[in-house]
Length: 267
Length: 257
Picture 1 (cartoon, helix red, strand yellow):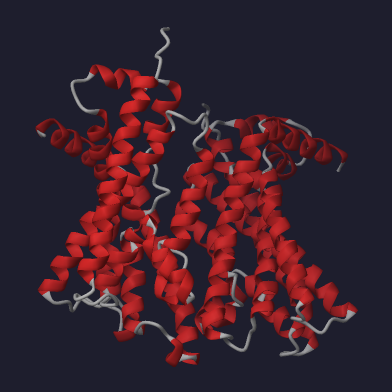
Picture 2 (picture 1 turned 120 degrees about the vertical axis):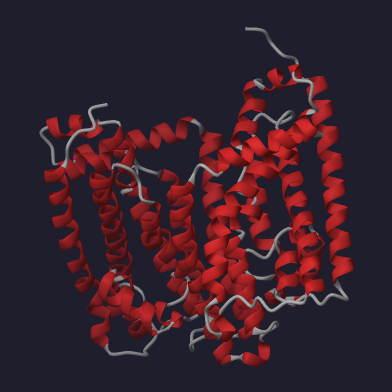
């Protein structure tokens, strides 16, 4: 366990080096968040009765989404891992006395945390200062905050396990680009990135909520904004736990068999 | 012009060499913009209208912006990649050749995959026209063409400003993407939806509302006919862009690498 922890720390520190990129990213995040809220504002002013969640809850949802974008965005792939599987460089990893799946996992989690930790603070600070229905609402009960934190952890596990599942598939496919492109599009649509799930038509929303993509950003963001009440949280988080476990299991098996199947050519 | 077509065919052929990956990246670009359009469909399914616009009208609006951005991204891709051209000192070589500088930069790179988005724009436009978004006249059809072409020109101008900034910073400044990626994403609705401050910025600073919001008012019979001529006025934006480009070229010192 200790070696994964130090590997995790190493990655985290490397990720924190890119401060300029984080700064530039932040400025776009503010604009994106503001435009998104201005857009929903137009709908809200015109048809407040058809709004499926409170405007304040929606604003919190959008600002948190911007703050944690790099934490849960599926397009944040680890291209180093993909390259190593494609080129066969992964064989070097076999020489190390570590389990490759666990190492990939700690690496993915660390990189995501590092990218997000720089960006989130200014976005959260500024957006919580905005006036009432347009800002991030920080008034949240300690119990709800605790539940939110747990669902965040589960969310990171689901996102990373899904990515690792795709990396493991690369052992069997010649080109993983197709599945990556499709995954990102599906996650955007079914995970509440394009439109928060409560805004979807009823039948489609019910379907979307069962997919692993809805176990990503959708759950913690809606718990924090109060759209998912604490009484319903155990059911949704149970589903999160199920997807995390299922994806980790599938990814682990695929990686093990993939490595066993792989023939490393010399040279 | 002949030379330009030659370059165009070279870039197209080089993209087609890896056919599978060409179609995959077309698919990737398409899925992103299809998702954007689906978001409009879902919200309009729930709310029926916003700001008095119906779904076919919004589809027309987005298809104009999508066509304009994909045209400019396909043909002005060389400008986008300008940071790389500078940092690898390819610009030195370009300056030695007896052809206009900007022309050569444009020829350096093109992005045929963007034509997939153009196709999507055409389909959305056809649907919008078919479901009666506008009472058509010849004048309105001309205005629509003007909107797309001038829109592409404005996006080209924004890309040019981004490129000029790299003359001074020598590396791509990500924050400037706000005016490239932002309008492509948020141009799905007429800019007036986002409230007055946004509309003012996009009318007077980066005149994208002149090719989208204002002429749309004319197309949908919500404003006077002279709004339809505003896309031509927007081209004034290209003058400071060109001046900045000249300033940048004069300021240029090779990185020497």
